[in-house]
Image 1: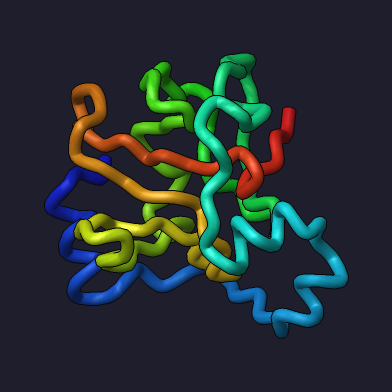
Image 2 (image 1 turned 180 degrees about the vertical axis):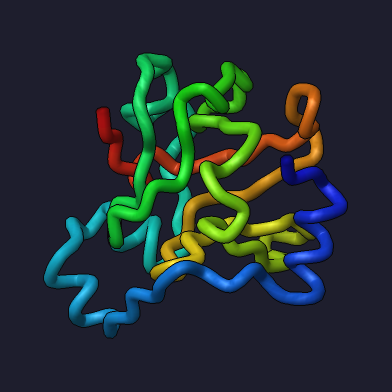
Length: 147
């Protein structure tokens, strides 16, 4: 189980090796994705709080990257964070999510990306529930629900 020390280590020393890589140009992504999904996943945007389709959804299932369809999160790790975005305590595997220091908007945070295609997912924070203490705060537009 990952914890905040692991997140900081990955963000500063390098991410775990992914099982595979998907690399496309921005133009290729633009042809495949809607403008809204491109703005969030490729241009590191953020959807408005409480606007995403998975914010209040707690049905069983798995969540994949909307760009490359890699499984990222399981509904068993999803929790109500009252933040306005879907929140998870752990990824399905330690090497599916990449971590990067983000000092935009006048604060220091840890950005989370799909480790396979570099899609922007959101950010991770150390204020989640036990036992991990992590809150993976993810844009719904970055996810695709699978049953």
